[in-house]
Length: 466
Image: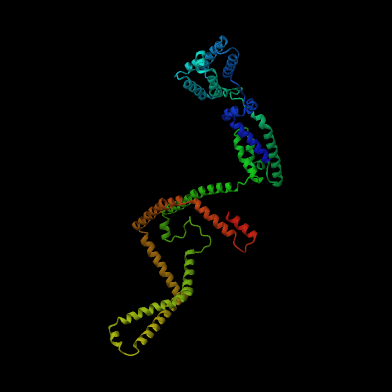
């Protein structure tokens, strides 16, 4: 079916190009025009055909009676009249070939050397001119330079609908019937494979085949034919599909990124303008627009986790470094005492001073860490710390709720977000999406070929990344 559809497309493209290329077929492959002219309602134009028949009669008469005979003079007079009539009536106009007539007139004017085309034809078809310039030379000029331009003219019949006659549908009809029957058969098969489908849905499952049935826009049949050739493995369109998909994704990604970022910024600006910043600062937890999914203050919970991690995991690891810093500071402070310089003469004072600084730094670090642990574990200390944080938040919120402070902060935040839209969102639009897609493709390839993975897991990764 893919090959049959390709043959049909070849016929469609030939029919589509026949009128523009008819001159080429007429000059080089006249057998094609003889066969296909009736399909397009084309027949020889009576006026130009009669002109060429008269020229042929003149040639025959000259060969029989000579150029100076009265019979030849009569034929030449008739040709002068037909030439003048051809220039006035322009029989090439109906075939949209007025330019061809202009070529004929220009060539004839150049041959005779006059500005009037009628005068040029009248001079050319005269016994005096043909005798002076040579009959054979001039008639060869006509046959080689003028006749090919006249012979391509034609008359095309009009139908009752006012359009040009076009019987290509007779050639195309068997193909359309075949494609229609195939589409119905495939649709019934799809409907049986998917019982929930209606016949209408099954037909649109292969929507691209509908182009094969349209009696108009026939060149669009290239779409289903390319798909069929790809399915039949007669043509590999995977690189083209991938390029098209990347182009579509790049355009959508660029626009979608801008839309998402701008909408987020607009929502934040709207929240600030609606006064939600003030309500948040006043710690009003009954905001109707805020949805809590677990009845947990996530900020406090995260803070508690960070405190425990710092106290029990981080501080013990950095205790030696803290002790070294304290020891260095203690030694520096002792050396700055004036009496220390006088006591340096005593033996063993340096060693004692170093030992004392080390013990003092260790003791301070240990006591400080114990105090921090005790504060974290002591319920009363934790309560007092919580009260301190709460009081700090309340005092900060109260001061920031003052009209001039809050108004200034809101205006600055709105202006800052507007600058973000104008600067950073514009950078997003200028980001080279093709580079991003190429990096994504490389990353997908690296992920899908990790060693030790079986085929099923690799395919799963590819589907998920897709």
